[in-house]
Every structure is written in C-alpha cells, then in structure tokens.
Amino acid sequence: MTNGLVLALIGAALAALLAGIGSAKGVSLVGEAASGVVSVDPSKFSKVLLLELLPGTQGLYGLIAAMFILIRTNVLSGNAAELSVQQGLGFLAASLPIAIVGLISGIMQGRTAAAGVSITAKKPDHNGKAIIMAAMVETYAILALLISVLMILNIGV
Amino acid sequence: MNGTKYANAVGAVRAMENALLTKNDIEQLINSKGKAERESILASKSGTSNVETMEAVWEMIHEYAPDCKELEILLYKNDFHNLKAVLKAVISNREPSLYFISPSNVELNELVDAVSKKNYTLLPEYMQKAAEEAYELVTNTLDGQLSDSLIDKALMQAMQKSSDEFGSEFMQKYSRLVTTCADIKTAYRCCLLNKSAQFMENAICGNSDLDKEMLIKAALGGTEALFAFLETTSYSNGAVLLKESTAQYEKWCDDVIMDLADTARMQAFGSDPLAAYYIAKEAEIKNLRILSVCKEFGADKETITERMRKLYV
Image (cartoon, rainbow over all chains, first blue to last red; front, side):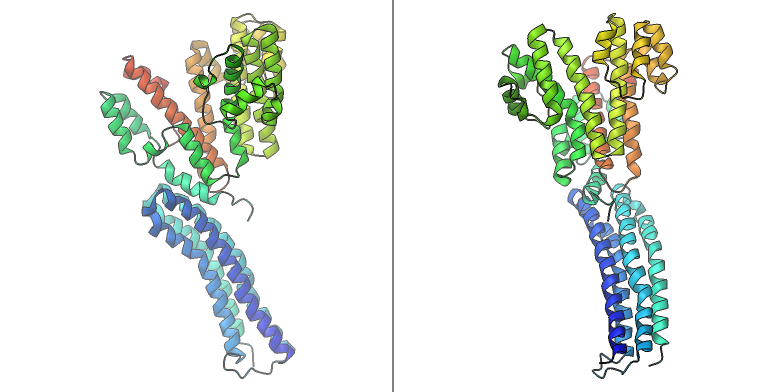
C-alpha cells in the first residue's frame, strides 16, 4: 500500500466520520425535542419524525463521498491503485468539503429542526414551514457534496 | 452543543401549552351559567385535568428537567411562606400543615424539624439565616408583622442571589420584577400606616429597579409624594392602579410577570420556556380560582373580566 493510497483512505474515513458525527448529533437533538412532544401528544409522532430525519442526510452524503473515493481507488474491487502522494492528497482534499460542512451543517440543522419541533407541537398545521426552514440548511451540505464528488471524479488515477 | 439544553423538556412543554386556557375559553367560562357548564368547558380542554394543581405542574416540569436547579427559584416564595406558617404554628402550638403551600423545595416535616429543634442547618442555605433571625425576633418581640417583613425581605434577597449565581437572565429579571413590585407595595403600606424610616429600611428589600433611598424618602412624604415618585419610574402604570386599589395593582404585577414569561415563547431551548410555562399555569389556576369565587358571590361579568390575569396563549 502506497502513501498516496493511505492519504486517500484517510480522506474517505474523514468524509464518513465527520459528516456522520454531525448527523448523529443533529438527529439526537431533534430526537430529544421530538420525544418530549410525543410523550405528551403521541399523535404528533409522524410529523416530528420528518423533522428528525432531516439532519440524518449529512451522514449519507459523507458515505457517498467515501464510496466514490473507494471506487476510484479500486479499493472495493480488491485491486487497490498505486497512488502517488500528490494523488492521495488530492483525494484527501476532495473529502474535506463534505467532511467539514457535513459536521457543522448536521449539528446546525439539528438545532433548526429541534426548534421546528416546537412549531409542530403548537401548530401542527404549520409543520411544513418547520420542515422548509430546517431544509434550508441542507443546501450547503448538498453544495459541499457536489464539490467533493466533482473533485473525486476529476483526479487522474 | 451549548445552548441546546432541555430540548426534551421544552418539546414536552410546548405540547402541554396547547392545553392552556385561551382568551376565548376564559370568556366562555365567564359567560357560563353554572358550575356544571364550567366543568364541561374545562374538561373539553384536553390534558387540562392532568395538571390542574401547581404540584402536578411542578412534578411534570421536574420530571422532564430534574437537573434544572434555577427553576427552584420559582418555589422560593412558597418556601418562605411555609417558613412563616411553621414559625407561627410551632410557637402557638398549632398544626402547621393547615397553612402549608405546595409545591415547595422544603418539605413540611423538614421545616418543622428545623424550627422546633432550632437546627437551621437542616434547611437550604438560602433560608437558614432568615429562619433563625425570624424565630428570635418573633419569640423576643411577639411581633408577627416584624418577623413576616424580615422573611419577605429575605425571600427577595434569596431570589436575587440565587438567580445571580445561576446566571439565568430570565430568572434575574423575574426576581427583580417580583422584588420591585413587592417593594412598592411595602412602601405604600408603610406610608398608610405611618411607619418609621427605620421600619421601611428593614422591610424594603432594595436591589430592585427602584432606588431604595428615594423610595423610602418618597414614602415618608405621604402617599401623594410616593405616587409622584413612582410616576417618574417605569412602574408608573402600576402606581396609577395602586392609587385605585391594591387588587388592581396586584393584577398589574401578575400581568407584568406574564409579559416577561411571554419573552420565552420564542425560545426553543433552555430553562426559560419551562419557567414561563410554570408562570403561565400559575396565572391560569389563579384565574380559575378568582372566577370560581366571583361566580359564587354573584359578581357581574365586567367585574370578573377586570380581575382576570393576562394569559400566556
């Protein structure tokens, strides 16, 4: 295994790890708020569940970026590519947008969605507005994923 | 994840807020013909029956946020009221449970034990000194009014000290509001009873939104001087009502505290929404009590409406 491949694998790990941590924190915060509402009014379960799912997407984006790195470096096929240090650094750099933005946006989206749980608790008919507000945070995770994927796909192997 | 505390408790409280009485409900209750109709209106509010006493409200909040110590400040007034009751009951050999208010941070038996054994270390720190001094005062002078005013002042000081220690901005504002409203009422009463400057110095807490020295000076000058002073402060609206009646002033004080609680409505995390819900429930229960008494004595709709406290929803 070359040093370049090690760097690429570190990149894949960071994408999955940091974005996953962001999602876990975000989902747990919304889960706390949602549990409070459901403990008093169980009929609101389906509405708050939608909000709880939103911060979970960052972890998924991290996984997608990591999978792209593993596919491009042929690690999944069992015939790992011989990567130079420059190429490895390229994959590591490509993983950073989704790793960092995924971590921060997952937590922030969790906060927004948890605040949205209050809207759902008090005015269930306005649940859509709470979802839209939380979904706005998603935009930046999608942009980061796009950049990461474009970079991964365009590194010459 | 700082600033996201009590997300679970706030979620629960937001759901419980749906069961709070609205302005329309209160109007319906005022227009109701009898007790049966009132009970059916209350029963139609889902969940209301679950938390119809302050003990139940407190238990529910405490269950969701057991580690939220700053909320205990809300119970200080009950603790100090209970201290007054127990002191008098112990000294006059009466049953203290008759005057005991719940919820409280200190249980009845703890209070009775501490006062009867004169072991004030059994009490929370914020009550120890006041309990000891009030006991000495009431046994030496047999002046219940003096010991009551000492306890009232100690209550305000304890609320302010604890809210400063916890660093809760909401509780700091709450403590200052309660203290200022109480100080104005004390100054007015002292004024009516021609109390001395020394008595006022001891009875008025200070550290409120008003300058203590100026308040005492104004109160010594008579009611007109007191109202003239209050009209220059942010409490002028309350002063206008105090001129008319103490009951109207007390309603104004409750409404000002409700305005403070209203500021927590936009918050998704922290202890403020929990404290606001407790205050809202307290006002609701007070409204129901006033309404029930007014109806019993055949008061007209205008009188009842006038006495209704501001609502949270």
